[in-house]
Amino acid sequence: MGKLASIFKDTAIYGLSSIIGRFLNYLLVPLYTAQLTAASGGYGIITNIYAYVALVLVLLTFGMETTYFRFTNKTHTDSETVYGTTLISVGTVSLAFVVVVLLLLNPISELMGYGEHPEYVGVMAVTVAIDAFLCIPFAHLRQQKKAMKFAALKLLNIVVSIALNLVYFYFMDGKDVAYAFYINLVCTVMLAVCLITEYTGFRWKLDTKLLRTMLSYSWPILVLGIAGILNQAADKMLFPYLYKGADMQAQLGIYGACSKIAMIMAMITQAFRFAYEPIVFAGVKDKDQHEMYAQAMKYFIIFTLLAFLMVVGYLDVLKYIIGADYWVGLRVVPIVMAAEIMMGIYFNLSFWYKVIDKTIWGAIFSGIGVAVLLVVNVIFVPQYGYMACAWGGFAGYGVAMLISYIVGQKYYPIDYPLKDIGIYVTLALVAFFVMTVVRDSQPLWFSLAVNTAFVLLFMTVIIKRDLPLSKLPVIGKYFK
Image (cartoon, rainbow, N blue to C red; front, top):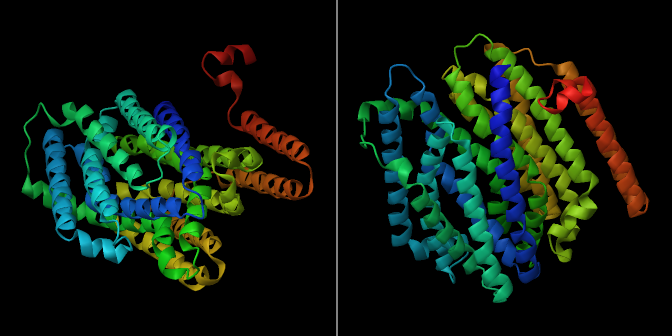
């Protein structure tokens, strides 16, 4: 239970910073959607560009974050050499990427549909290259258990970003999408300066033999990462090519804005990953690892389902995060959130092949998931628009999750508490069904009252079954 407690503690720090950061970052959504109306297509451009950025970031880090954790905890490797080798390799690839993009900026911009605005592509190429390099110092902070510094820098980045965006888009009443990308670059450079102590004060050393070994471990993770990010971003990249309507940018902007509301699941998954990954690899030989995996999975599902019900229950309030002309797309929110839950479960399941160094399985599972997503998008987007994008992600993650579980139980069996998980899933589905019916047929005040009752019921079941208040620190003494 010590490791599980450590996961909860670090997840709380990472999660709090992530949730606060994402909440603050959400302030940009009403700002952008107010200044850049759906009809203008401005937010569609932001959605499309950042989808490419997410994919490029995965390519430039090529699985070296996870690989760094794995190798820095191996007894026969020097952690400083592992860190230096990782920094040099990622930095070299990122620099080469920037050079190539800037040399071929015009043809690349034309291919992406931004021939009249190559500055969008150029600025974001430089930004994502720096971000890719900084992923390794941030991973180093996680490995060193410097969660507070990690969280502080992430929050600083977001606060400065919001301040600069407010200055331009609100106080100066700006409407040029390019400034969103310029501000991102400024904030990324600021982070690089703040992290200078994480890549100074030691001798940088590239161990080529070690690098070859690390790359043999990381390339399947790269494929896994590509597949994973395609599950999240491929629909936003493909949409301009598949949807033939004249309002393509507007429709993409609506989908992107409404998907932002569902991103609380991505916050929880990311926070859990930041805390979970270093602990898993550090204790790979411990006897209680299987039990820890099982319990971590259960609690992850419990709290993501609670988050799901809270977002769905108060969607009529949360919708004010985005502009009113984007509300037509709110029906994608539950679908995208459910897909994110399955993605989180899939991430939890992924550790069985990482700890036994069989990461090729991850590439296979994610590749199948991406294939499902692409098929759904190609067949249905031309007719059903962004709703097909939402269901494509749901189907892709669902298939990858199920296959990973089935194969994992054969090669690395873990006794997950399926009965307990099933109870919570069933309760959440019943609550969601009732919430949806009431929302569509009753006044807002009545709908919110019913939804609140179901959220409280779900929390009560959690407390009664799996989180007794008497066992919590400090407040526990009042419930004995």
